[in-house]
Image (cartoon, rainbow, N blue to C red; front, side, top):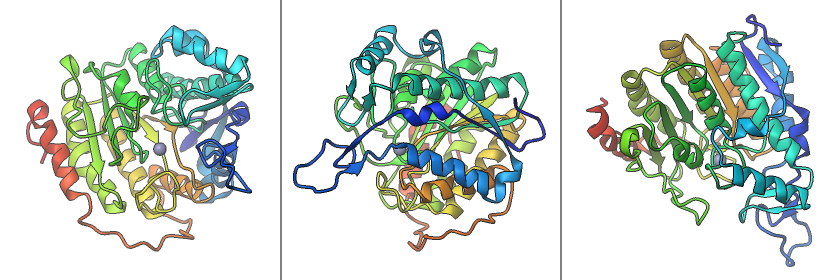
Length: 373
Ligand SMILES: [Zn+2]
């Protein structure tokens, strides 16, 4: 079990690797025109590479590895409807298929799905019980698009939402989820949209709604409803945004909102698909940018929650570079200088890109929080 000596405890469960998403024209169904189909982008190789780089890279000595566990179905019901959970299980039991156009499960996916949710909760419990301060649940599939009764993207169960809800049930009054996956964290948003006890923040590219499973737009105007008004923060960055835009979103919007909200625990939906080389994203973040994101997140955790934070792995589909970017994120989290060189980055960062979007996000929050600057 976790030790307080480790800088970061990573929770990993081999059983998540058995979630077989198959092949096709990338995430779509197979194409007869192709002689070679692609692996579905959310495959086990990406997570195995992430584990490998964390085990072999410069941060290895500061990481303690811990096993995961299967979630109980009753634990999933903290944020999901029982009928939805039953329907997911039934599709797995009947041999698998598509929950949405892009959400695939196989006959063997049920146990991996429970392992991803349970391992996220194991990371949460370790931080909440005080056996570690900083925990990463290295899980797949990702979870932040999954809504109360709707699969979406590659996500089936909403891991960051499960972690935040677990923190509330442990007695904490205010929890903040910060999502820097390149896609809008619509599932987490949806789970807490009318609540003021869990602040949800998503920094993402401007992809808009994408069909019946993802009606949320990700725009800064989606600020919450009822008591939740002002407690959902969307920073919708333009395509091509890079290191500087993410850093500014954190410092100009997220940091001042947290100052007002005063969270007792930070949760991260930690994706690497904002990288310049990700096939699922159109942003230009480099390893230096991810190092900065990790550092800024750790500083926010230091300021608000005694350094305590739970990170849950989300996207990152460049099967090599995403692993390097996760390593850079962890270097930043641990306050280490970046030792692992970036083998690929060359796209120059435009420091002005994203400034308008960051201003729009701040203006949308003004009715609830006052001026952020
Ligand atoms: Zn994503």
